[in-house]
Amino acid sequence: LTSGGTLANFEALWIARQVHYLPLAVAAAARELGVTVEAKLPDGGRRAVTDLELWQLLNLDPAAALDLRDALLAAAPGPVAPRVLDAHGLAACGYQDYSLELARRYGDPLPAAVVLVAATAHYSWEKLVRALGIGGQQLRVVPVDTHCRMDPDALWEELRRLSAARTPVVAVVSVCGTTEESACDRLDLIAEVRAQARAELGTTFHLHSDACYGGYAAAVTWRADGTRRTAADIRGATGTEWPSEMWVRSMEALATTDSISIDPHKLGYVPYPAGAFLLRDRRGRDLVAVDPPYLEPGGADPAGEQFLGRYSIEGSRPGAAAAATWMSHKVLPLDERGYGHLIERSVVGARRLHAALAAADLGGCRIALLPAPDLNIVNFALRHPRHRTLAEVNAFNEGLYRALSPRPDGRAPEYYVTRTRLAAPKYDGAIAPLLEALGLAGVDEWRAAGPEGLVVLRMTVMDPFLAEPAGATDHVAGFLDHLRALATA
Image: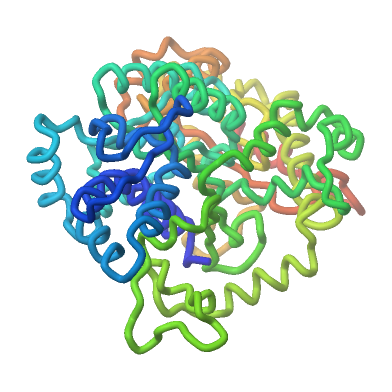
């Protein structure tokens, strides 16, 4: 557990970077210790790690890299090998000395390694690559499609370009539930692209899912007995066309990742602050472990499992988030009985709101909606008949946002919305249908608007009650009436 999603993603990328460069340290340590250690190559072959070129060393599967460390320590038992290995590692040397050593040992160095993220990835990813010394310029953005999901074909083309330029890839970051739109990348197709890159390009990388927002939705796919629900099973329960087969496959594909970040304080409904990250291979933690001398593991806890600060950037931390997460999971199981049901009904409510907005009479105003959400966030923009330009449409939606926000005098609005901006080039793949629905000109005016982009209103459905109105109040109908009154005032 961490204090939030940013720290969870930091931990995952920190470990991914260490695993990426681990084979270089093993090769140097094997030479110094005079031992032979074999590496498993992406094509299944095996060669002595000291015989591999730099490009090959930086393109071993994460599990193969960690196997190398185990093999080295087995070939040179005793306290010396761990110290030698650490001395040759990036963590001890730092980027400056490490780069000089690579140039000395391997000649002309390769281009700086990159991290690939979906264009809709959280803004904190740039902070992370800067903080880790990877560099903001090495964060490459993969375009999204009209549903704001990473485009697998664009990912493949980017990997081909990088391979041709001999540019290593530390990690590819897919998003399960974007913060702006709750879109879920086709992680199953991204996993297929990774397999294709391994087979055809000899390129490997750490696959991370930033599931901070949407990871809990995987509970929808689990039965109480631990078996998976099919898309047809879930649709039978929702009484709607959601979810699609591809949505279920995307959730199942979380099992193919090397790491996942997930926030209990989002769709886990746990109070702030509670983030978490999960690793496929727990051996990766040892590459970042630091033990304080006053808290050395021992006694009944020889592996230090009760002192998790040895593996994380955060040492001391409050236990309230852990207790809240544990209790929430006990009350609401992570399957169709608990979180699965809660999130399922929330998504049905969001899609009911989306359908109602699409069919609404808004007094002559045109509406543009992002596609029906993968999870529980609905985005839309309105255009009044008198508006002719993007700037006018943006100002109109900013006015609606202010009217649906807390007022300076402290009075609460009838309904709350948030708003965001869809700007170039991040939303190049999604903007055209929205501008067309609003009846605006092509994308040139939108691109010229810069960071202003297109202002859209954003609504997050966080409870199951919107799906089936109970009692005298239907808040979908109530919101539409209120929105119509505001839009035509």
